[in-house]
Length: 562
Image (cartoon, rainbow, N blue to C red; front, side, top):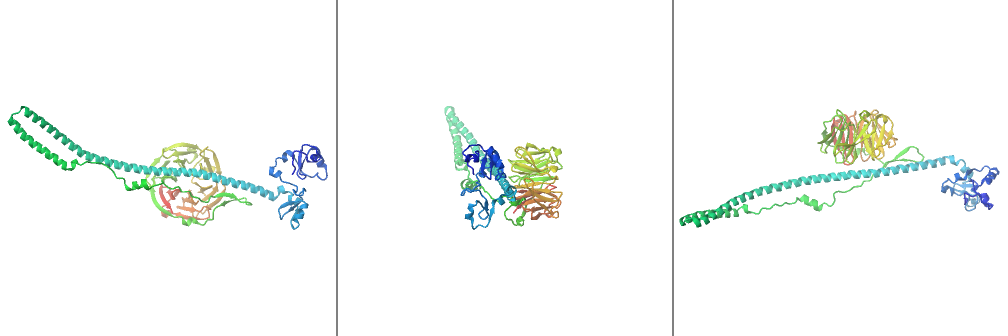
């Protein structure tokens, strides 16, 4: 390698300093204008490729440092040893006498830039960069999901603490009420005695005054007779005092309380509020394999686990609704149903199935999804209803933000701060809640009954017209399609559990079918024998492993998934 790219190598050898203007890789030296001209006319060098020195200097440092002459013998590389995978000069051959795979290096480097090997390296670099990008995005999403999970857990802890506070407040009110009742009862007895004593005390004082006046102004006979009467009264009062002194009326009354054993144990034995559990599972990332342009999914080896999925009916809810389009679980176990017809409304039910409250004045309603911070996003359906998605704060029961998407918006799901929704003729769209930017995922036309769900980096959506379910990545690239119309007809609602199993409500097949994460296996979980009649919405509660299924007529069923 030349020691100085900016100096002409030929002139430098003649002890003349001239700036190089071109570089000859075969001569491995720079050339000035004069030497460049001689170089181009010389028979030995006229076919050498030269590059302007400014352009040659754009090569990476590692490439510039690659020696084209043998460091040991200071001669140009002319051979290549396949056995040792290294270039050799003529003198290096002595060290490779036993090597049978010595090849003229010119045969190796001919058309190397357009060779398959070079293209393969370029493709491998692109694939490696893309794979690193996908892994980075996956980890960044995991960071965001951890923050969201923390918020959900914090909310659950706060809500549980609130329930404890409410229960303790109720117990406190009851015991305080009991204390007040006992105080009033005993105080009433004491007040009655005090009133009687005051009256008798007044009479005795009056008697003392009478005796004093009798002594002063009465005759002896009057004084004698009066004394006899007073003696009788005194005896009577003394008997009264003796009687009450031996009765319960003079017992000292006090009020105290004894702490319930359970409460005592709560304050002494309970050391922690709960236990934080961190779970780990295999992540699913689309990785491009070398030599294979098609993306492949890396998943842990799986068997058909669908046989282990079992449902246990927990409750049936008569919602008194019709035209239900969507349903969700809230972190506290409450259920929200979005009703389209006959009037747009959103009804919230308690975990025991009782109605909590109903929202009607929130605009057009189609589907609903929980987005954290005690808020839900509600789609409005056809664009003629304004093309808006409302963000509603559950506690305040008010619309706190409106997203103008400018298109149809039907089924909706939420992932990593973004809403992914069925935009009708515009396909599957995604809007960021932070900057409200909108991205197109798929452009294929969708029906109003098509719904979408997410798990990891994958999206799952129904296609009612074709009676199938499709899984794609976040860029809309199809990974698999489940199409068994004899099993699943007019799929409508869709949801995914923690393991990636996909639950789909078949509106016309009167059933709920679960599909494996790779789309290769399926199993019918519920049918019309279980009360399903045009099942239209399904939601899996990943926090509590429950499944909510709602018929078009509003009848809802809650199952424990075991």
